[in-house]
Amino acid sequence: MKLLKKYICLSLFLFFIMKSFAQDAVAVSGNANQNNFMTSDGKIFVVMAVVVVIVFGLFLYLFNLDRKISKLEKNIKS
Amino acid sequence: MLLKSWWKILSFVLLLYTCTMGFLIKIPVLDGRMQQSVRNLFFHVPMWFCMQTLFIISVIYAIRYLAKPNPLYDYYSLEFARTGIIFGVLGLVTGAIWAKYQWGEAWSGDPKQNGAAIALLIYLAYFVLRGSVTDETKRARLGAVYNIFAFAMLFPTIWILPRLTESLHPGGLGSEGNPGLNPNDTSAQMEMVFLPAIIGWVLLGVWISTLFLRLRIYKEKLYEAA
Image (cartoon, rainbow over all chains, first blue to last red; front, top):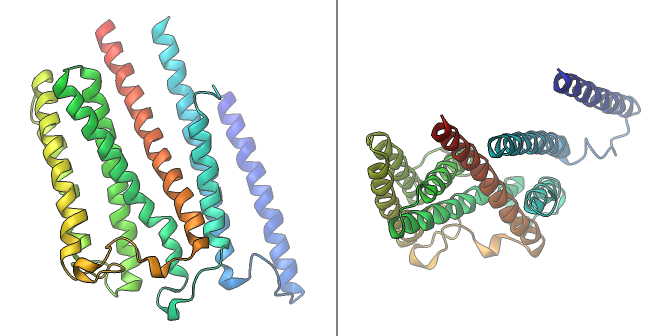
């Protein structure tokens, strides 16, 4: 239950970060300012952002899994 | 904890570096041949490095098992081979996606593609063989022997045969070429991302294998205790 709360908080946090980025992009395109970093170079950096989020999520998951297995190992020793 | 798991954090840092710098660095123009798809070097190629490393660890433990039949060595051998297969499949799939847009077809029967597929099938048979033997020590011993044969076949299929024929892979100039990488197509800047990428992906593969391994050892202990 505690973990569920943590994940909900985290996803809400990520959602708001994305929200703020999205508004940024809208504002920029509204200004017709094409020098935005994210939309430059054929929007390749959007892909970069996606990949970075995936790496973060994947490693968060792996570290969690590692910790859980460590706990199990401790349990069986005692 | 930090002392023991520094390499896991290193893997995270290196992959974060790869996944940002891999997109940020300037790439050589190469007369428009590869364009941005050359950045796949940081993602597709390390899959094979990872597979190769995991299979090497697997065969080392297979040999150790035959020298001294400790069931622990068998678990090592099995779990590293299992994760190695996963990375091999990822390499094949990512390669097929890249090939679709670079060579025109996802599977064009390139010697390296065929060789890698054969090598993976040989390794898949390792699991079939293990699954068909019920006796534990027999399974471990047969598995270890087969593992060594599979490893021996890995070299002709992905290192030697693709070098002997024309290949679509970079530098596939018959025996002259290196079927993995054409040094003329990479820049020093790309190598600065490529090397950390290899280390990062390999460490990730080892980490995932050890997780499965620890889970297996735990299960065996639980089984013994019951």
